Image (cartoon, rainbow, N blue to C red; front, side, top):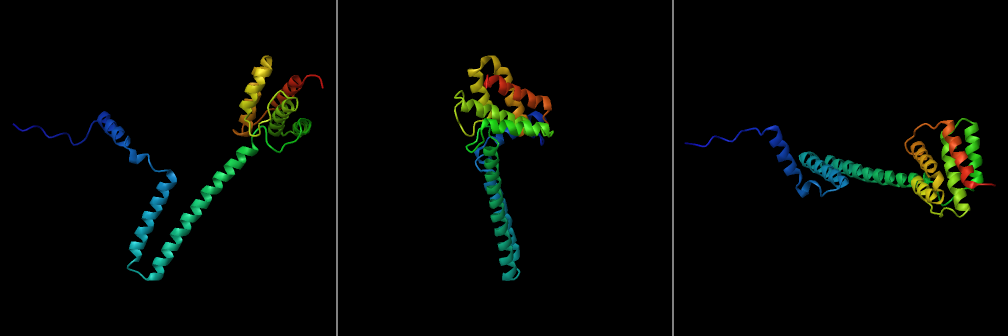
Length: 201
């Protein structure tokens, strides 16, 4: 008696298991995305050259030139995007290497608030708060520090204001990175917190 033929199609669960087993293999994870894109372009370049081999040498040369220009253009674009992202992250940090005084930032925040630019007011107010604490020696001067790093340090120095400092850091991030609209009362809260942490002037 012959054994029955195996089913031609696996069940849903069996298919998922087989797919998981297949995708575990290292060859799927080794190559960087950019390398895979370059390999894809190279394959198409070779196909184009193979197709152009029956045509004139000028056509083959132009095809190779266009493909090379595409690869170089893509590489330049990716390099520029990474550089722009690094520059944007540096400029969006709370503490930057080249910055104004706390009083200057406070004036910018108050002017922005008066003009109805609530997001700018909130961001400058939080930066003023952070810089003021650096100027008073309560916060270490670390250019590139994030809002939550600043908040964590200040919560240690001012435990009774820890919740407000954390909320202000959240508002800073949501406004600057998340592009959420800021309300005037949010900016006022950060300015009030700056006053509270600064103490008598």
